[in-house]
Image (cartoon, rainbow over all chains, first blue to last red):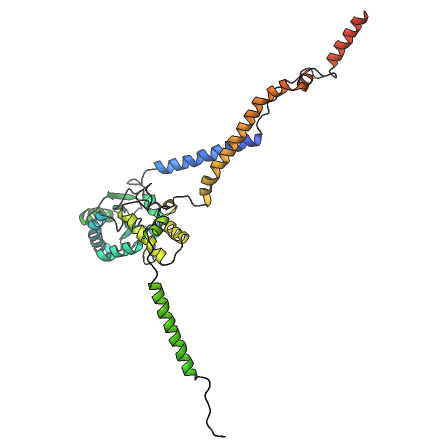
Length: 187
Length: 176
């Protein structure tokens, strides 16, 4: 026997589908915001940290993978044709490259940041750069290093760890000082 | 009849020479025509540039950005337009070179779809919740105002307690 009568309030609860859907939507949104914030606040690669592998396609179409240069010292220089301080260091970079190229123990990579190809090629020709240079396609490499501008130079040791960072124009003596020290370390 | 043959058709050599000459003439005319193609104006360049952003100067549209990098980009747009590229082709080229962030509007693919789907979806869910809340707010009033509401709210005649109560009342009336 039914001993209770239901009060006629007229309230209709929300459909469970709407409630679950709303929560899922909210969770997905929070996840995306979290991912964005994590990426935004992730710091640059610190000295001593392993540098993730990357590849550079040169203006000549040659693909250079850092994985093929394991056990060697890698110099990564970010530059652009519209960057005046980059002109200041360009001849020093080429000189340093010429200094080490015979030994094949050091790789120089010129990463052209947010530039137009004709101007970039003109820059390479003007300063007679012979080490591999290529555009930073989709700004992937610069985002990986989280560069703040150009020029910036990163030197990776034989173990693939970041050994040196220079924000601003570098010089022949500064580079050779670091590279010689890294070359002296056991592979 | 004499042995002379009247030549009505040109010789093969003449035909070949004629074709070569025609091709050369067509080439010259085409070259002249392309040379006459006007250089795209600043307005045409800026129409595309205003929908793009250079990663170096964040939040400044490409058409008004004063840096040398942006000036080079605008020149590149002009060059591509002069080569006959469409706006979409130019944008695709810039995206391939510098990434999606050069676009003023996120591209309609991959996770970027969420930007277009989430706001209207959230709005729809909000409307549904509001409709539900308003409906719940109105219902008790409707019940109170409707003539059948009192009958519905009263205990049903099928209720055994009511039947028992009515039976008891009738007995008392009879004086049992």
